Image 1 (tube, rainbow, N blue to C red):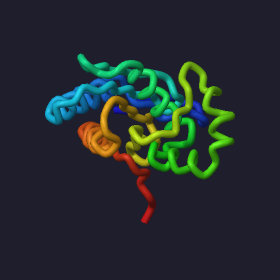
Image 2 (spheres, rainbow, N blue to C red; image 1 turned 120 degrees about the vertical axis):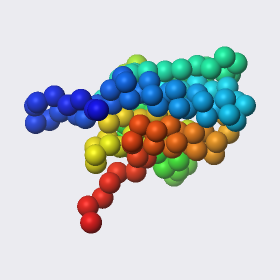
Image 3 (cartoon, helix red, strand yellow; image 1 turned 45 degrees about the vertical axis):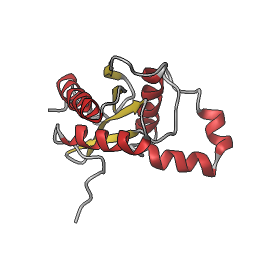
Length: 156
């Protein structure tokens, strides 16, 4: 269950338990695909909650995965795919802000998805080291494994 402080401006945050369960699911999926990846989960404030670098994952993939996840929460839960398109449309803007993240770069790239639960953004999950479409599929399934969604719920 996500935690939330009592002040009115509080953020909903993914718990370590949720993050570790999502990581376990992601690693299992990567093993099933026969690929070695790195995965990072940040909370909705951009803080690192949990990470895994599989044996054989390529060089610097942990840092790339974190930058992808950080960009996702920094932009209010936009997917890496949407952020990549924003970069293509406005490269000068992203070139100027990409290094402004505290503790992580802002990397607008496919391979990150938001984690929404009960209509609130609680974090984001990023991955690196594989093909973009496979990465997104694994992230979607890992997030679903904890009861989360990659899209915000909308009122009907």
